[in-house]
Amino acid sequence: MKTRSLLCSLLLVGCGSQSLPPVTIASVAPTQMVASQPTLVRVQVQAQLGVQVDFTQSTLAFDTRMKVFIGPLALGSGSYPPGGNVEGTLPTVLAPGTYDTTVEMGDGRRAVNRDGFTVTAGSWPSGYTIEAVGDQRSGIPFSVTVHAIGPGASGFQGNVLLNILGSGTLSPGVSGAFSSGQRVETVVITGTGEFTLLASDINGGHGQSLPFTVGP
Image (cartoon, rainbow, N blue to C red):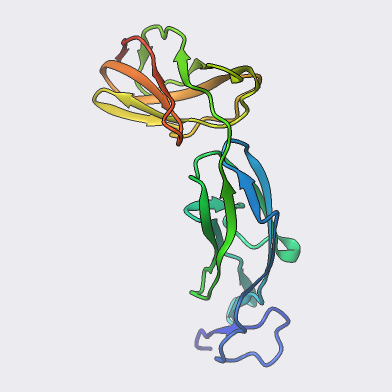
Protein backbone atom coordinates (compact mmCIF):
# COMPACT_ATOMS: atom_id res chain seq x y z
CA MET A 1 0.00 0.00 0.00
CA LYS A 2 1.41 3.38 -0.96
CA THR A 3 2.32 5.61 1.99
CA ARG A 4 0.02 8.59 2.46
CA SER A 5 0.31 11.50 4.87
CA LEU A 6 -2.64 13.83 5.47
CA LEU A 7 -3.05 16.94 7.62
CA CYS A 8 -6.11 16.51 9.86
CA SER A 9 -7.79 18.36 12.69
CA LEU A 10 -7.07 17.39 16.25
CA LEU A 11 -10.45 15.69 16.50
CA LEU A 12 -9.79 13.91 13.21
CA VAL A 13 -13.09 15.18 11.83
CA GLY A 14 -13.16 15.55 8.07
CA CYS A 15 -9.62 14.30 7.63
CA GLY A 16 -8.29 15.73 4.40
CA SER A 17 -6.34 18.55 2.89
CA GLN A 18 -8.45 21.49 4.13
CA SER A 19 -6.80 24.28 6.11
CA LEU A 20 -6.91 24.32 9.87
CA PRO A 21 -8.74 27.19 11.65
CA PRO A 22 -6.72 30.30 12.50
CA VAL A 23 -4.82 30.36 15.77
CA THR A 24 -5.95 33.04 18.25
CA ILE A 25 -4.61 34.70 21.39
CA ALA A 26 -7.44 34.53 23.92
CA SER A 27 -5.73 36.48 26.71
CA VAL A 28 -2.46 37.87 28.05
CA ALA A 29 -2.15 38.30 31.82
CA PRO A 30 -0.89 40.57 33.13
CA THR A 31 -0.75 43.05 30.26
CA GLN A 32 2.11 45.07 31.73
CA MET A 33 5.30 44.82 33.80
CA VAL A 34 7.70 47.18 35.54
CA ALA A 35 10.97 47.26 33.58
CA SER A 36 13.11 46.37 36.62
CA GLN A 37 10.89 43.59 38.02
CA PRO A 38 10.83 40.05 36.50
CA THR A 39 7.19 39.20 35.83
CA LEU A 40 5.33 35.93 35.36
CA VAL A 41 3.18 36.22 32.22
CA ARG A 42 0.51 33.80 30.98
CA VAL A 43 -0.70 33.71 27.38
CA GLN A 44 -3.82 31.69 26.55
CA VAL A 45 -3.60 30.33 23.01
CA GLN A 46 -6.49 28.71 21.17
CA ALA A 47 -5.30 26.47 18.36
CA GLN A 48 -6.53 23.35 16.65
CA LEU A 49 -3.53 21.11 16.16
CA GLY A 50 -2.59 19.25 13.03
CA VAL A 51 -1.70 15.57 12.90
CA GLN A 52 0.33 13.59 10.41
CA VAL A 53 -1.28 10.22 9.64
CA ASP A 54 0.92 7.40 8.30
CA PHE A 55 -1.51 4.70 7.16
CA THR A 56 1.21 2.14 6.45
CA GLN A 57 2.50 2.36 10.03
CA SER A 58 -0.88 3.08 11.65
CA THR A 59 0.62 6.01 13.52
CA LEU A 60 -0.42 9.56 14.35
CA ALA A 61 2.06 12.36 14.98
CA PHE A 62 0.60 15.56 16.41
CA ASP A 63 2.25 18.81 15.39
CA THR A 64 2.59 20.60 18.74
CA ARG A 65 5.31 23.03 17.63
CA MET A 66 4.50 26.55 18.78
CA LYS A 67 6.50 29.65 19.65
CA VAL A 68 5.14 32.48 21.78
CA PHE A 69 6.86 35.86 22.05
CA ILE A 70 6.40 39.01 24.08
CA GLY A 71 8.29 41.46 21.89
CA PRO A 72 11.58 39.65 21.15
CA LEU A 73 11.42 37.40 24.22
CA ALA A 74 10.32 33.78 23.87
CA LEU A 75 7.80 32.44 26.37
CA GLY A 76 7.11 28.79 27.21
CA SER A 77 8.70 25.54 26.08
CA GLY A 78 8.29 25.82 22.31
CA SER A 79 5.37 23.40 22.11
CA TYR A 80 1.60 23.63 22.61
CA PRO A 81 0.82 22.74 26.27
CA PRO A 82 -2.40 21.08 27.46
CA GLY A 83 -5.14 23.69 27.39
CA GLY A 84 -2.98 26.14 25.48
CA ASN A 85 -1.86 28.00 28.62
CA VAL A 86 1.71 29.22 27.99
CA GLU A 87 3.57 30.87 30.84
CA GLY A 88 7.02 32.08 31.75
CA THR A 89 8.85 34.80 33.65
CA LEU A 90 10.04 37.73 31.55
CA PRO A 91 13.48 39.04 32.56
CA THR A 92 14.16 42.73 32.99
CA VAL A 93 15.65 43.33 29.53
CA LEU A 94 12.74 45.16 27.84
CA ALA A 95 12.91 48.94 27.66
CA PRO A 96 9.77 50.85 28.63
CA GLY A 97 7.25 50.87 25.79
CA THR A 98 4.63 48.67 24.16
CA TYR A 99 5.23 45.25 22.63
CA ASP A 100 3.40 42.74 20.44
CA THR A 101 2.40 39.31 21.65
CA THR A 102 3.01 36.81 18.83
CA VAL A 103 2.16 33.14 18.35
CA GLU A 104 3.81 31.11 15.57
CA MET A 105 2.58 27.55 14.97
CA GLY A 106 4.86 24.92 13.46
CA ASP A 107 2.65 24.71 10.35
CA GLY A 108 3.01 28.42 9.61
CA ARG A 109 -0.17 29.79 11.18
CA ARG A 110 0.39 33.01 13.11
CA ALA A 111 -1.46 35.38 15.42
CA VAL A 112 -0.38 38.81 16.69
CA ASN A 113 -1.80 40.98 19.45
CA ARG A 114 -0.45 44.40 18.47
CA ASP A 115 0.99 46.61 21.23
CA GLY A 116 -0.94 44.64 23.83
CA PHE A 117 1.84 44.42 26.42
CA THR A 118 3.28 47.47 28.18
CA VAL A 119 6.58 47.88 30.04
CA THR A 120 6.69 50.82 32.46
CA ALA A 121 9.74 52.57 33.89
CA GLY A 122 11.46 50.83 36.79
CA SER A 123 13.90 51.54 39.61
CA TRP A 124 17.51 50.56 38.91
CA PRO A 125 20.85 50.44 40.72
CA SER A 126 23.46 53.00 39.77
CA GLY A 127 25.81 50.20 38.70
CA TYR A 128 27.33 46.82 39.53
CA THR A 129 30.49 45.30 40.96
CA ILE A 130 31.77 41.83 40.11
CA GLU A 131 33.87 39.90 42.59
CA ALA A 132 37.33 38.78 41.51
CA VAL A 133 37.34 35.79 39.18
CA GLY A 134 40.15 33.24 39.37
CA ASP A 135 41.76 31.49 36.43
CA GLN A 136 39.33 29.28 34.52
CA ARG A 137 39.25 26.69 31.75
CA SER A 138 37.48 26.98 28.41
CA GLY A 139 34.08 25.28 28.34
CA ILE A 140 34.02 24.56 32.08
CA PRO A 141 31.22 26.26 34.11
CA PHE A 142 32.23 28.56 36.97
CA SER A 143 30.46 30.91 39.35
CA VAL A 144 30.62 34.69 39.42
CA THR A 145 29.10 37.03 42.01
CA VAL A 146 27.57 40.32 40.90
CA HIS A 147 26.47 43.03 43.35
CA ALA A 148 24.13 45.92 42.63
CA ILE A 149 25.39 49.24 44.03
CA GLY A 150 23.87 52.63 44.80
CA PRO A 151 20.74 53.82 46.62
CA GLY A 152 18.14 51.06 46.95
CA ALA A 153 20.51 48.48 45.45
CA SER A 154 19.83 45.97 48.24
CA GLY A 155 16.24 45.67 47.02
CA PHE A 156 17.10 45.03 43.38
CA GLN A 157 15.58 41.78 42.07
CA GLY A 158 15.99 42.22 38.33
CA ASN A 159 18.24 40.68 35.68
CA VAL A 160 21.36 42.04 33.99
CA LEU A 161 22.96 41.52 30.60
CA LEU A 162 26.27 39.63 30.69
CA ASN A 163 29.11 39.98 28.22
CA ILE A 164 32.89 39.64 27.98
CA LEU A 165 35.90 41.48 26.69
CA GLY A 166 38.14 38.89 25.06
CA SER A 167 38.28 36.45 22.17
CA GLY A 168 35.52 33.97 22.98
CA THR A 169 31.85 33.50 23.78
CA LEU A 170 29.92 33.69 27.05
CA SER A 171 26.81 31.83 28.15
CA PRO A 172 24.29 32.86 29.42
CA GLY A 173 23.86 36.37 28.05
CA VAL A 174 21.22 37.28 30.65
CA SER A 175 21.59 36.61 34.37
CA GLY A 176 19.01 35.05 36.59
CA ALA A 177 17.12 37.31 38.99
CA PHE A 178 19.02 39.09 41.73
CA SER A 179 18.10 38.52 45.37
CA SER A 180 18.64 41.34 47.87
CA GLY A 181 20.88 43.09 45.36
CA GLN A 182 23.16 40.12 44.63
CA ARG A 183 23.37 37.39 42.01
CA VAL A 184 25.61 34.31 41.96
CA GLU A 185 25.60 33.19 38.33
CA THR A 186 27.07 30.09 36.71
CA VAL A 187 28.66 30.97 33.38
CA VAL A 188 30.71 29.29 30.68
CA ILE A 189 33.37 30.92 28.50
CA THR A 190 34.46 29.22 25.30
CA GLY A 191 37.82 30.55 24.19
CA THR A 192 41.23 31.15 25.71
CA GLY A 193 43.23 34.17 26.78
CA GLU A 194 42.56 37.15 29.04
CA PHE A 195 38.94 38.10 29.69
CA THR A 196 36.93 40.73 31.55
CA LEU A 197 33.33 40.01 32.55
CA LEU A 198 30.81 42.81 31.98
CA ALA A 199 27.39 43.37 33.59
CA SER A 200 24.91 46.00 32.41
CA ASP A 201 21.22 46.85 32.43
CA ILE A 202 18.83 48.59 30.04
CA ASN A 203 18.95 51.74 32.17
CA GLY A 204 22.66 52.38 31.59
CA GLY A 205 24.02 50.83 34.79
CA HIS A 206 27.15 48.76 34.31
CA GLY A 207 30.16 47.19 35.96
CA GLN A 208 33.08 44.90 35.18
CA SER A 209 35.42 42.41 36.78
CA LEU A 210 39.17 42.54 36.98
CA PRO A 211 40.86 40.68 34.11
CA PHE A 212 41.26 36.91 34.46
CA THR A 213 42.69 34.12 32.35
CA VAL A 214 40.87 31.25 30.65
CA GLY A 215 43.07 28.37 29.58
CA PRO A 216 42.40 25.41 27.28
